[in-house]
Image (cartoon, rainbow, N blue to C red; front, top):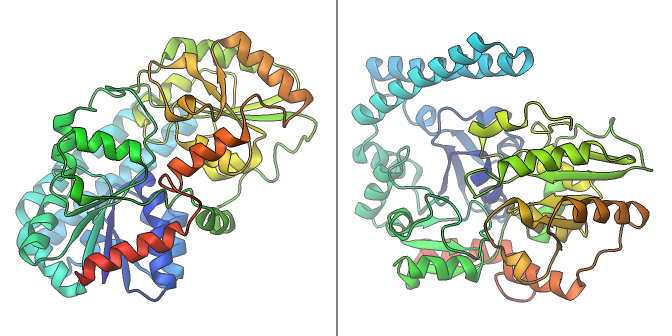
Amino acid sequence: MFLFLVRHFNDIDHITPVAWKMKSDNFPVGVYCMNPRYDVWNDYRLCFLKNQGVAVDYLHNAFDRHRGEFHQILNRLVQTSYGVQKRLDAQERKQSLIWVGLGGRLAGFVGSLFYKLTRRLFYNTRWARSILEQTGARVICFDYVMPSLYVVDAFLKAAKEMSIPSLALPHGVYLYTNEGAKPKATDTRRFAKFNRFDHIIIPNQLRKEILVESGVAEEKMVVLGSARYCSEWLEQHKKIVPRVLESNHQEPQKLKVVLMASKPQARMDVDRMADTLDMLAELDGIDVMIKPHTRAAGSQHLFDDMQLPNVSHVLTAELCEWADVLLVVGSSVVTEALMRGKAALYLRYLHGNTTLFEALGACWIIHDEIELKNALLSLQANRTDVPYKKESVAEFLSEVVYGGGIPRDILHEYEQFIAGCASN
């Protein structure tokens, strides 16, 4: 079996196309979630894979039936605590009650304590090895995850003992061209994250250069482009995305705009972002929504008092379909916007980083709020009139989606490389 161990929304987004492709070509595939906090059964991509015949489950549930009564009690306490947290968090979003929010955080804290205890007592290398044996694992695939998180370390040790190749697959598209784009982005941390994997699939040359500079062995890496944004998966993904906007926001005369916010820790100017949101809310004839970053749960409060609709509950793929214009800061969603031929406005003034799409001139670079307002008014009059060139967009997509080459069969190359690692 080809094992994929996932943990969060973002890595599932990028790993699902690969698992789908391999299953479609009759490879035995299993996708197991290492994160007991994540809601597997409400993830539309994992449900899609399960319907295709892929083995999908929580890792700890699928292989823990014979661990003994004490382990089962601990596992039940973990799941109960996280379940309580989920319900209280949902109630807090509806009613904004402080005590409900505190209760949710307490439940989450308790769940994490029980999980760490369970991991220390039971989830060791022998446990991981037994799973690899039960599944007949030929390859084990992770995203770009720190080996110290969840049970990654145990599986890497077990895989090494059993000579089973371990792979790290992209959980996003790296687009920052400057050093220190995020506080944790250090050479030491990158080396610790990547060096223990046998093979690393890289989406673009920019990411490879950064890892090489961090000391990661170049022979471990292969540049294969982006599975998430390749045209084959975009077409398939479009068929399975749950829709929530179809019955709303159907005013064709209005320019439809979505702002995709970056994580505040990615050197974002939070105060100026608030000013920009206020300006956007005052524009007439323009329907604007904002989606906070999916991995910035701790900063959701920054968007609580704005006048614009917060569409955290709407999937990015549907927003890209719905919108005429995408406003981006450092988000890789610019890739999907450009693949779909949507106008992409880059709010350069909202953060302190530099990006690949800026360097290649593949978007409309906006330097302040006045420029943004004028650009939107211009697009309101003509929704296809953008100042950047098709050639620049093609160069960007070649680098980011196709790994620096001409359009090619990305998913097939992922499949061939992973299967080749198993054969070797």
